[in-house]
Length: 119
Image 1 (spheres, helix red, strand yellow):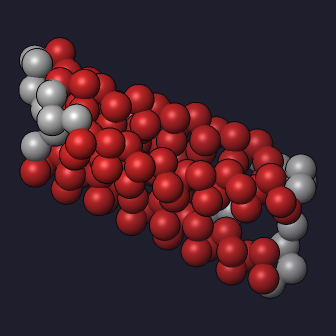
Image 2 (cartoon, helix red, strand yellow; image 1 turned 180 degrees about the vertical axis):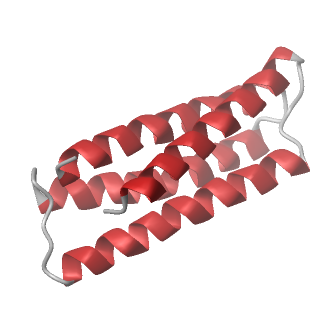
């Protein structure tokens, strides 16, 4: 895994969590700008997924198991799109809270991915 990418994904996810948490605090639903932020974080998570799969295909192996590593990669890639979809169906402040929670989950998944890979 690329440690710098893992760090960037985690930090951008935390920034998204703060941003959407602030919208929740201000009693606002997710806006178009939030969805642009979600897209950026999702693209980074998808890049991490692709890089992880490429490294696995080249024969590199995570220290704590390939199956769990792939499961965490897939979960990380689906985390923000899932939260974004829920926020589309919940057009109140709770939609913003859902995205903030999903972004925190993604940041935690990054820490776990780093640990599984052998960091």
